[in-house]
Every structure is written in structure tokens, then in C-alpha cells.
Image (cartoon, rainbow, N blue to C red):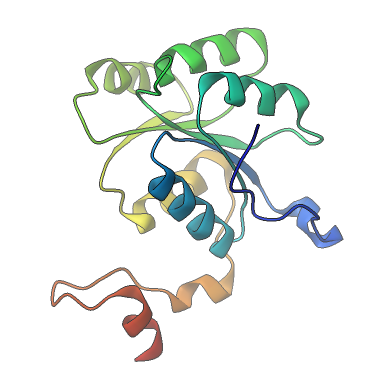
Length: 163
């Protein structure tokens, strides 16, 4: 079953907001991605396994505009999932992510249109820019308040309040 959704009831104005499926095994990364993508104006839905990924894609009331998927889910690789999804359903834009060795994911992203690879730790600005490049959605103006940590070690909350 899907987890960590932005909300159960979406406001009517959300119909224009891009929907992003997040397939990630690490619960902290999953929750972080849900929070950040919602902050930037996306409608995120997060799942943990390949079965949940296929279930979410098959049962979505509205199609997803993109998928952010871990290169190595517990039960199958992210590239295998994308190959199957793109051959059977649609050429959904995708971002493969991984903290470890990901030669197969990098090669797949390099040779497949609308698929990109990002290494962990994820830089949020790069993730948002990559999603923007793939699907054309621009972040909400309010999202500009948040800044990534600086080299001096300030965290996001202090950077936002010190503006």
C-alpha cells in the first residue's frame, strides 16, 4: 500500500500541479522527498517496493507526470521497473537515484530519453531543476524561501529565517 502521501484530499487547484511517484526503500529519504517535492509545488506519492510502484501506477486516479526511483529497490532494480513501465504503459519521465554503485542505472539514464541519474546525497536544487527539465514544471514562488545549507553549515531553517 502507498505511504507518505502529500494529503488524502487534494484541493481543486492541485489538478494543475505535477504528480510525482517516489519509489524509495529508505523511509527517511522517502519522507524527505515527499516534504521537499510538496514544498516546491508537486503532488508526491511515495512507495517502498516494486509491487507498490506498479500498484500506484496501475491504480492512480490521474497519471503521474514523473517518477523518482531508487536504482536498487529491495526486490528489483529501478532500471528493471522503468524498462517494464516504459514498455507496457508509457514513457514516463524518471530520475534514478542511488548512494551506491549504480553502473547499470547510469548507463540506462545515459541512453534512455527522459531518464536522468542523480547520486545521493541529493542536492534539492539539482533534483528540482532536473524535474523542471523533464516535465517543465516551475517551482512555486514560495519555495524560493528555502535555501540549501551553506558551506558555513547553516541549516535550511536558519537560512530561511535569516532572510
